[in-house]
Length: 285
Image (cartoon, rainbow, N blue to C red; front, top):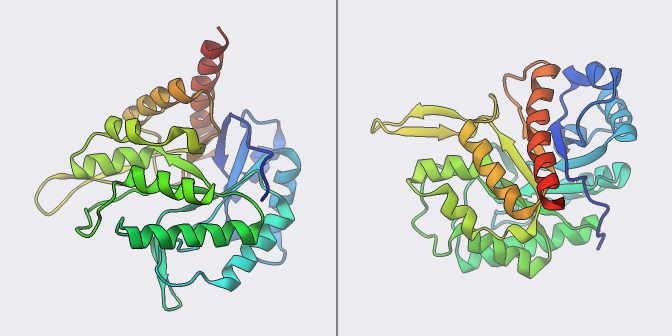
C-alpha cells in the first residue's frame, strides 16, 4: 500500500477549466488543486493537457464521485480500472471518495445518497474500501456526507461508523466541515458535538464550501450542500476550531456551481491560508 507523499498542509481549490489561463499566468497562493476523477477518464484532449500542465506545477488531489462505496452491490470494476489508470498517470498526493451510494443495477444517479449505519453496511463499506485501496495500491480518504433526513434503520452514530471503517481498513478520512454544519442544522443537532466525537487523528484533508438555505414543507430552514457560494462565517469558525486542535491540514475550497472568477475563488483560498498560517505560528510558539 502506498503511503505518502502527502498534500502540503495548505489551502487548495477545485480546478475549473475556465480558470486555467489565470492560474498559469502567475504563481498562485495555493498549495494544491483538486479535480473530480470522472472528468478526466478520457484518453486525451484539452482536459488531459490542462491537467498535465497543472500537475507539473502543483500538488494534486483526486476526488471521486461515482464509486458508490456505500452500495450493497459490487463495485463497478470497469470504473475502478479507469480510476486506477488515472491515478497511475498523475500520481496524486490524495485520492478521496464519499461515504454514499450513487448507483444501482448499472444505473448511475446524479446524487450522493445516504446509507443506513448498521453492522451490515459497515462490513460492506469496509470491504469496498479494501477493494479500492488494493486496486489502486494506495490509501484513500473517505468523506463524511451531508444529510437531510434520519434513516430509521441506523444503529451506529456516523462518527463511530467512520472511525470503525478507518480502523478496519487503514484508510484516512476527509472531513467536510460544511457537510457537518449542514447536517447538524438539518437534524437539529450540534456541529461542535459531532466534531468532538470525530476521529480527527484520521483526517488527511479538509473540505470547505458554501451552502444554500431553503424552507422545507413544514416551514423549517433546510440547508443544502450546494457548493455555489462563499464559505459561511459559521463554517469558518468551526474550521478554525478544528485546526486549533489538529494543527494545519490540507484544506480545499469547493465551489462547483455558479463558479466565480479566479480572483474571487483565490480569495477564499487565501482566507484559509491565513487561518492555517496563524495556527502554524501558534504551534511553533
